Length: 175
Length: 151
Length: 311
Image (cartoon, rainbow over all chains, first blue to last red; front, side, top):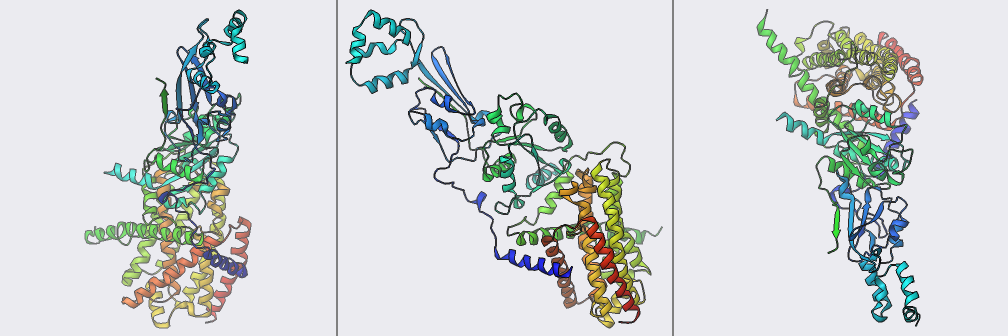
């Protein structure tokens, strides 16, 4: 029994070798590693409302609805698992995962992001074509002036119908 | 005077009781990490207790499964007032990945009145520490919701 | 009714050196305990006001009482009463030896058993299986450590020839510390083991094990009841080392050197207890009983035999 006591007391001396291992955390900020995945940040200037992030999210926390004049993207970040699938899926690199990890809050509304983007409706039938930003992006990417790219504000069904009535529309695109 | 004194004592001495309400144990391991000498929460008066009767704060992890709901309510009633309920992790905050599952109740707010949510999958030990300090009013909130309407 | 002795008596019991003085110093001793444990565990540890914040917080919480629990509320009061009265007897003997009475050591031993009995009563009336189990284990532990403790007190009694604390202090003034004789040294070792068990320190804290028994007898206590138990425990953690130093380690004279020596011896005993507490694992109930009855009590008997033989 005594040998046990002595060995335990020797162990206490060994523990003293380590000194004090406590991190300085609350009194000095903690900066995580460079590729740390923290809170999701959406760059509202670049988002085109395509919905690729909503498709990719495993927690299905991104909800996209069209209503009237606007497309609403609603991020319920309380459910986020920080997998960054949304960041990898976004074609405009509008989603980043910051290094913010101190995200505690008494109110879940502080963890929500709501974006409302204007829609473009088909000039023939009134159906939703896409968001205005997406249509502008297509116009910019195509670069040339295809007769004013008048078919950009037609929905896919009306585009098919119009191309039957006006074959030049198809030839323009294929040129 | 006694009220301010008791408030001061409550802020300086929080005994936590950990409840796993169906969690995958990721958040439980991070809670264990907070209680190690690296973060030394005894400096702030935080101590782990093993019975809800001694507890001031319930740290609940996991989206509440149907089986655990009744036990969770009994634990809540067994804890004497004043008490804090802390939802740790994305599952307890909003149901996490399981928010639309048939076997869970979609987050702690559907079962108990929650004082603070600490999202994360799992939240870092620093984030848990920050959340408990925020629940006591010692540090400010750092997140806010974002609303943008295109003109 | 002798009013001139009643009011000082109330003051001695409630303020100095009774309840208030011993409670504050005892809580400070628990802070020293937590700080030294933190150093051994390579971390910082709580600030100086932590035990007082803990007690203040507990006083502000609602106490939930199980229905039809007879001894539940009176048990913490019994524990604090036992600790307070023991503190009064010991400290009054230290400060003013003339106020002792014949047999006050025996009364002291009985009073020091009260907090453990209060724990048993509280646990048994908790209406919870953890409380009942903890109460049963505490009963076994009391039988085990009281045997060794009484044997070491008997050694002191045999050597001094009187059971008055003032006489024990006077004896050590004449003949030096009792621990310097063979039987006295053996009795000191036995007493150290038994006091570690009496205070519920590791390795003997099986009855109040947090991880095994959810706090044992204290499982159902909350609020004021828990605060009183913790205060009683803190007071005991001050009184027992003081008793040990008084019985075994020499006289305490009213001079500065002697007083500083007393503080130093007290700190040595405290640090020894805390370091053993922080580095040992918990013994099972059968291991603890086997140790305390089989080895410690036998050594105590040997010490008594040596004392009778004059060594």
